[in-house]
Image (cartoon, rainbow, N blue to C red; front, side):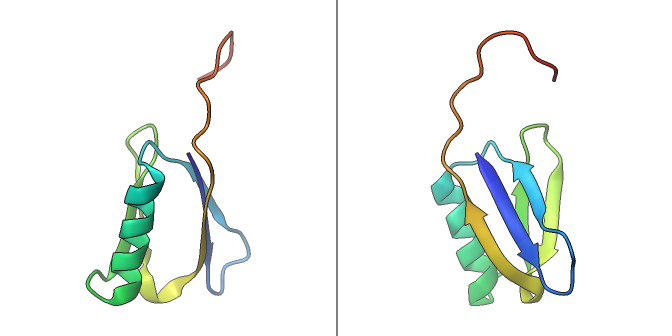
Length: 75
């Protein structure tokens, strides 16, 4: 699933393909914004982790689950 994250005082947004479900991403964002977590912690499909300070979050856009790709392509 594609997740776009806007960060305050940053010109570009962070875009990642996450293996987490929409509900998992939403709960991580909610926990970060509620103050129970200081960082928004997400991981992408390749296992890389993205850590963003909760006080710097501008917005989080959660896309739909991407359908499985069929055919030839690059990884």
